[in-house]
Image (cartoon, each protein chain N blue to C red):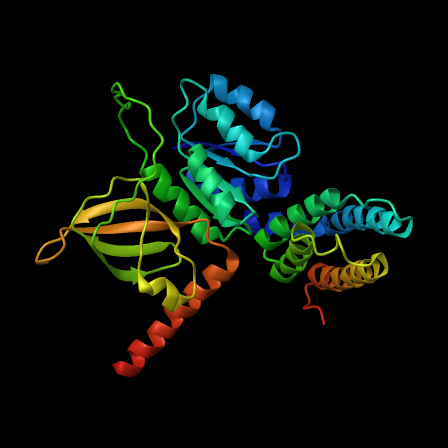
Length: 112
Length: 233
């Protein structure tokens, strides 16, 4: 195994931890939406921005595009004026899709 | 061997870059902490500095602003970031960045860009003449003909030599044909050409800060050209 392939395997091994970081940050945003307080969009934007960069670099282009899509929606202010319920439903669906893509990446399969 | 410093708060990205560049005989210094990297740069020169923009303690823009104030610092700077907005590319260039590459990293483009930047570094100390300060926008129009397009950049014929690492812009209907905005460009090399009545140099200019969509359109354009050429042949 060459050194880059070894790095990729180590990256795959870290995906569960990365998913947890995203889930916690996203959970905090969803709780804020539920409690009608200002969500920390910057924190979520930062986490998905980093994940979009690293996952794409290691060859997981779908994961990267999925993360980038959420980052772009946050940066573009899409959720700022949207109803909280609609935003929460979107984020929930986004996380489900992320899980499907992560499972594919971890198991070396393409997500459905 | 070149000494390359990479500053990025994402350790996965640092390891990936190190994995690509170290086997080529480069000495790689990696830093997740921009403040610490700045301290190291005060003491140790590097041949190339690669910097992320979105970092928690200090943004890449603030970092290169601080680096440019270091008296002995004269290395080229490559911004390596997930941000692809034209305003970010322009800000980086205005602050003194040499080039700009958008993540995710395409390893061939990354390695190629770095080779073109390091190869372009002046070998002799820069002579500084007295200057009168000004800040007035200007554009130079140079007649040119684009002869080839790759993911790295454009090959052009011009009447003028373009110094390495000079930033430039090219106006051409080609960009509309490809479907991309007029890109920022960096001269990589200029070679004299013979037997050309109109142009004296072949110049290669590298794209700066293209996003993934633009890269896809360039690849598609190249493929379509290859198909059209094969059909014509």
